[in-house]
Length: 391
Length: 120
Image (cartoon, rainbow over all chains, first blue to last red):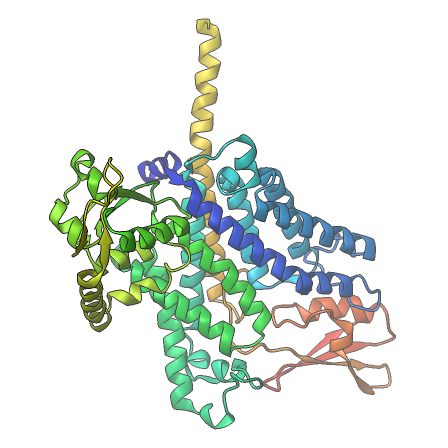
């Protein structure tokens, strides 16, 4: 155990996935502010009862409530932008702790979750990349690994206990899910559907999804499935359960925290593409733009000889190649899938492209497009086009 | 650097070296122990990550006057947020007993179970 703790303490983590998690988590904290701010102002009303955790806790006054709202707004905004991230994170953590423990009525699970998340983002120096701090003093590729590991641990703990606490007859009877399902709006569930069988199935799905996430986010083999299940779970609870705003805040807080699980080392994966082909070049340009975690290194086919990669020129001419740090080289549609799994805009849904029917159709479409693409080779020194070819 | 100066520095480094593993262990112990204990109490419990695990059971409250008459308290107006996790007995005892002439407060839970809290 001691050796394990030492290993975690001395580890390092890539800075950019953490920075994106910081932006998402701070956005969730800003989204929560109107709700918690409203509660603080209500608590400042002398006609509202004071329910402190400890008898000596002072009663909130209106100026105190506004001061907390102001601190929350400014520090969350500063953390999101990465401006003096360590200081803004520390102020935000202290503000969240004050709000949470000011009165029993301010408690909510997502507010409680924001407290360790803000604290760990602060300790982890989440402003080391993609931040105003990074523009000012320079970006770093790596940060201390242990707060990031604890952040991931926090996510797993939340899902694990959410699943464990739902393993009770009340929840599994479906009555809890039925009572929280949306009753109005376009996504409202009709009353006739709130019968035992569908509600029981939904309850089982909720428990098993949360349990699967807790068990799988840290497993490189099961993580792609966990991403899709996380997307489904958070999409469902935000769309179909109420209160929508609280659930939206919870989802916006949790989902960016999946990014540090991806283990995206800077330039750790290599993408080999045919630089003699304008069509491929266009795709690669988009991949580069969306590679916000800088996890991909792009090697053109013309530089393959000096790159010492397990990819031959013919394969690179036929299809895009994806070279992971360990394991099999992927080509064609499978390579596109692996690239999409590392982009922040697509990492949640891209694993769906691995499903056998989707992968088979995708590969056929990819081959057909590749066979019919029109490729212009680079200009020769004389300025004349080298040749036009179809591959 | 002198030998005398080096000794305290390495002791300091050793202390710092242990600080991070100790912090990690403390964080994990708290984050695992608190929700585990909460699992064995009524649901939903605070600090237990028990989101949507049970229907919130918010009680109704009645003020019992000296002559035995009762009237219901509007908890919605009295509380900023009515959550099931709030310790209504303690809060109403201090918040209502001290501010009214009530002799007791009767709490009725959703399952019909009743609990009387004396104001004396």
